[in-house]
Length: 446
Ligand SMILES: OC[C@H]1O[C@@]2(CO[C@]3(CO)O[C@H](CO)[C@@H](O)[C@@H]3O2)[C@@H](O)[C@@H]1O
Image (cartoon, rainbow, N blue to C red; front, side):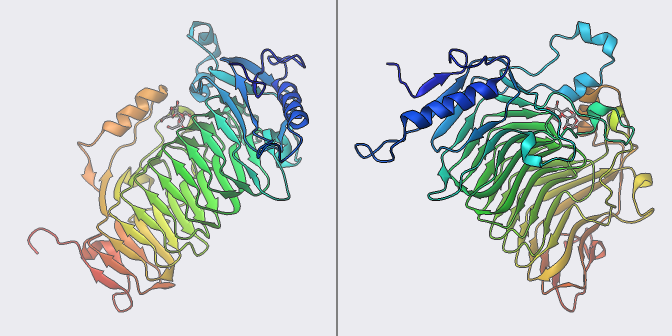
């Protein structure tokens, strides 16, 4: 059966998908709107459509503007490969590489670079619709959005390592419901996903790496989920960021470095950050700020160690080791059963000679901190020109290191009436025992 609501960008008569897939998709959307003009025909009328991108390279020179519900844009392959590693291979070795570029069903974002212009104009896919009901069920599935190159940022860094280019993959400007971003690949975009006012959004099973920021849920929202993704932002940006969200579920993501944070929640309430594997080269990995309250942060694995790859040595996120790996400004959060591996070179700790802080309660009241376990090792940081080898070596090193003294939990005076159980020995917890309930992790022989 063929359906008029299934479109293949390579057979659409308007435009040329390989030269400007943006023009083609906008023309298809115009056709859908023309054919599905009435909102009530036989109890239906606007079923939406599928736009299919077969595996292949599609330059995008015109921004796609989406203002219809039930639109699914799908490909056959997220196509991620590391552009970061490739751009740091000496150019005379490029001819010997098996492939140079990401693949799959791949959009090459070739929008004109905006100079200090409006952020949304640099988006490959721009979704905007006001009025009622909210735009619903727009789905992106199984294709790659590649921003191609980063650009010089004045820092002297190799331009391809700046994580800056003004490009966004998908930008949703208005309140939306039941959107899905599933099985996608995002690479070399300054922002992969920027979504305002999400309701019941699913960001699931994507590969979102080597982007300045990966996921930003802005404005406010509820009942959304970020699950099962492989994610890693640049040193200036967020891997997962949300503001003023309630009921957000962040679960089972593998968040690798080198985002300025792994999960940053601002004014987020009654949400869960559970079962994630989080790896960072800097402190401030999970940040709950602006009175983020009643959240569950549980059974996550935190690893903080050092950048092992030569091109990025010396880069940081500006935060010192007293920041905390898990930092909380808010009340009545449950921080339970998280594992922390802090594997750093004592010489690199800032301020010099300080005991790094693992969990820090900055402001608020009534947080419940229980059964968190920290393993802290002092290692001599090693580096390598080979990204993968350096990463794996660093990950697998557990021996021949000395224990490192840490502050497992630090409670600032502006945070009170917290309960801290079995999350650090007496010596490892800095908290006013008169205003916080405290039970130390026992030590051998005591
Ligand atoms: O660690 C997994 C991912 O990391 C890579 C390889 O390493 C990179 C290169 O810039 O360094 C960061 C983390 O060490 C990653 O964000 C980035 O991307 C992916 O190639 C790889 O899939």
